Image (tube, rainbow, N blue to C red):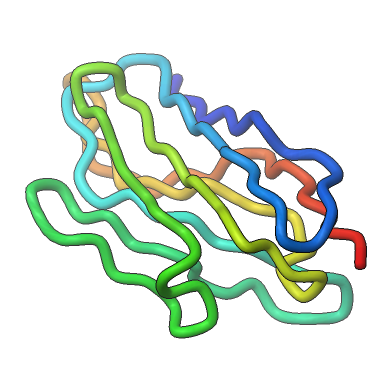
Length: 120
């Protein structure tokens, strides 16, 4: 009914940059809050950036000044531009969104995740 699809992950050297995209598709009436999370091996999933509809983006302290999240509501898309990457940024990055479905309720959705690996 609704799907989130991330893309753009890959392998990059420390200090490099990488951009991620998340596209929502399906019977979407409106997307409310969107967010990027990540999960490193052996660690809990953590919030990277929260992008509320019509509001300011909030970042985790660990990525402030290095990552920039944005959204284009007309395209049901969210982006994450990552720069000055560090090996500790290595994780699977997930897109998350609260989506108001056409003729239905608002539900929370996750993408399948995209791997980001930063080599030292």
